Length: 131
Image 1 (cartoon, rainbow, N blue to C red):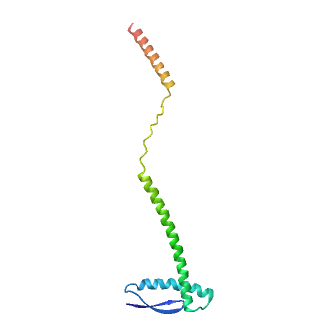
Image 2: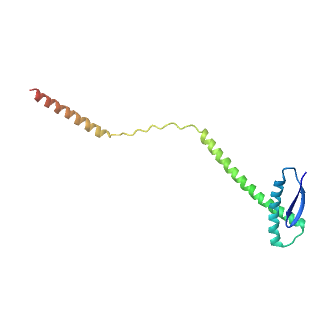
């Protein structure tokens, strides 16, 4: 089991970890060290145990906030998924039949009358030519 030296709050600690997990340990130690640095600037030198406790609590608070945000995002996604599923499963609405007269009936009646008069005149002209 590898032993790794990490530095938190200006103090060095030797910690064991599983082979291949050294990177994760260094990353976690860096996060804890960042929180310890905030504490050190605010309060000055504090006992090691108190520094580690406070830095750990600050990280836990940040983590809890991120988990809340993640939960909210997951809830919103679940709502959207449910809405999408409802839309997909909804029956297809029957097509509506809409009739729109293209030409008003009074116009078609007038055109029919004009056509009848034109045919009558054409017959008269044809009859006069035949004479």
